[in-house]
Length: 87
Image 1: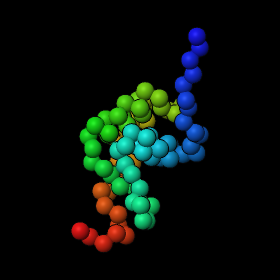
Image 2 (image 1 turned 180 degrees about the vertical axis):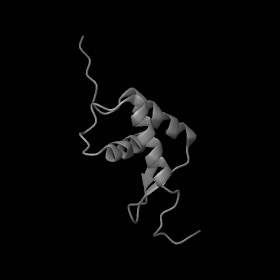
Image 3 (image 1 turned 45 degrees about the vertical axis):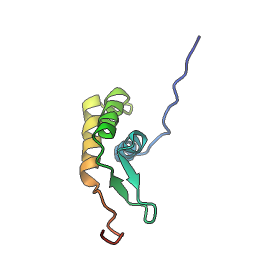
């Protein structure tokens, strides 16, 4: 029996792909009010994102380069929304 695997939608940039992988893994989420990406600081979700990046990188991108892009995106996202009031 032939099995199919659901493919992710085409993403125009490597950064967009990394954001989508991080969202799929649950490592980041959007502020409900303003739409800013926020790091959930969940080590298990981060590891899932790296596993996805290494296991299914975009065409023409090495697994290490895909994981590096995920790390770059994670490092650029804070854990709070810059528009929400503190505390």
